[in-house]
Image (cartoon, rainbow, N blue to C red; front, side):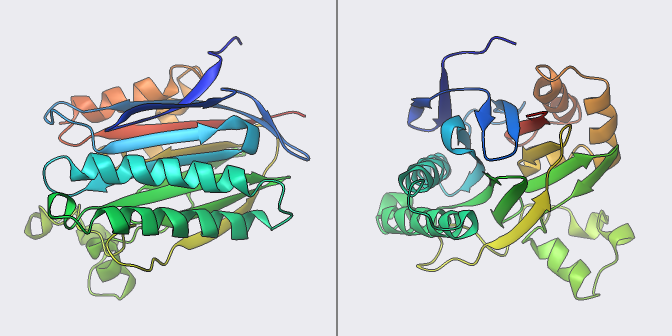
Length: 271
């Protein structure tokens, strides 16, 4: 399958172009990627950003927040900082998990420093990042952008939302069945952790084993708010690899599309 010659990050400041779009090789696994973002049906600007650097096996999705254009700035800064830091440490011999933690920490400081101006006061962004590590995938997340694994016909959410509603579910105040209650309308987008809102950040990390045929989906809440996990399975099963992200985004837009929608889909290939 022929692909463009460059990977890119899309965000408020435009396109940041990186080397080699498409297939990547790590010690034991090879993967290919497709990605897409949309403003949705209501918003005129896009506060989501995504990027990946195929040579180094790093993939990032961010959903910015803040007044005026600050959300767009935050997400773009975070994606660019993570890709740059992770690539810079490629020959360091440091474990992938430590490199990813360092990259998210650098991104947090970058967004935090930029938020110290009146124009960007209060800005921040979610992050979900995936890094290939031989026959494993290392995931880091802050906020409510999610990662799913598609393996052996099963679709499983890997990350845990750092959100107000999810905190209520985790502490037993709210049941999963009541999470869509009318009393909670408007609270779906309240997050309890974000990159750039403080000088320090606390990502969660996850490690999963990869086999040929494994799929990984990274997505902002503009998708997951409208499309349930079992529906993601159905849509992906009915899609070609190249059309999958567009099909997911179209469903989210058909159901309201009140937020920006972004996803990256990875497929592990036989080495």
